[in-house]
Length: 128
Image 1 (cartoon, rainbow, N blue to C red):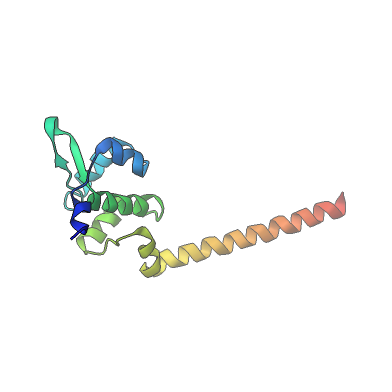
Image 2: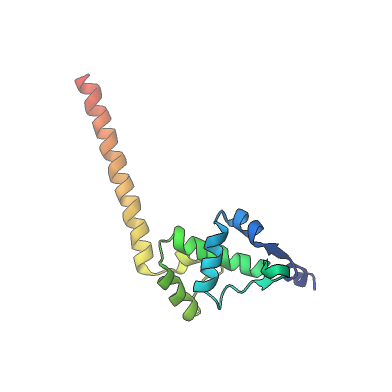
């Protein structure tokens, strides 16, 4: 079973911090907030080492907080309900209606703004 090799990979907190583009202190904070989901192994001198599976979970948590605008409490609820998706993209696919409508509203607003800009540019050309 070659898949087992993946689980044996451990990354330092600095590696994970760089990979996720999140400061190490934020990772330590999330570890306190989501102790069930994020349990790094501690090595010599209390250094944290993360399994590949934990790094993937951290990525999803990061995306839930930063891309989807969930709160810490919102992510805790997903974890508690066993609904944290495997990837943040899955969240959009089967996410709540609120998430979908927010994205739709954002797209509509962008379309309206773009149409207004086009009209303003045309008016400017006429008046120029």
